[in-house]
Length: 95
Image (tube, rainbow, N blue to C red):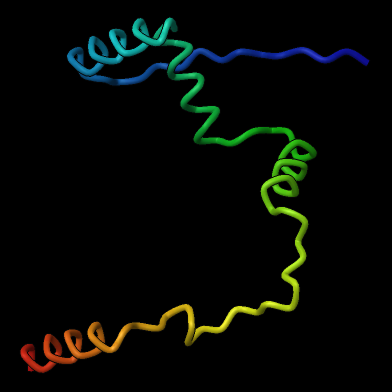
């Protein structure tokens, strides 16, 4: 079984000034405008490696043990008494 990559040429309508600025940015990064666009599209479209994505998710998720802690909506959204008072005054002023 062999694997090969097919590249596709695309045509974009972009203002000349934007292309000029993008070329300068690409040059500053040591890349061509083509590579800069390709990198951006890869970022937007996401990777095509599901196994790698799963491994990254596991790595970023930690060990997954909450030690018994559970989310409590009231604690998460708790405001200080000052914030409640200020919010209530603002709400009353709008009425």
